[in-house]
Length: 153
Image (cartoon, rainbow, N blue to C red; front, side, top):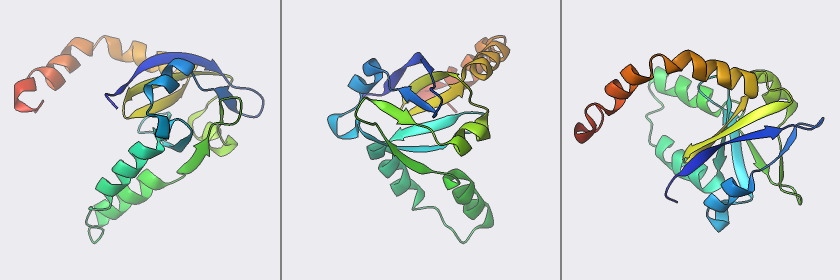
């Protein structure tokens, strides 16, 4: 997989289901088009990992030294609430109500795909975050990309 990309607006039904965008689904490898791991994101969003990407991430995380308290806490917090989800026969994903409540997800959502993951944001929360960050985008770009030849650091 070369890396997921795209921004999609979706509507959630009364049960918390949304139609997985077909354009995004075509970007996934055939083996990764049905099963996902849903998890809390780092900001006020949910993160949906194609199962093959979750397995790679889990393999990396399994190397963390769990004898260190900070590592254990990160591991717990990262995995807290993780749940496997699948597309139903009509191509919809069900988001459990506890996950929706955790990030304030309502009827309208934004699906943001990048690299190996898909974020699910409440639409208004997403645009507030984006608008609040745009003023600092040039500085952020310089900080993150300014030393690209040195690995970004």
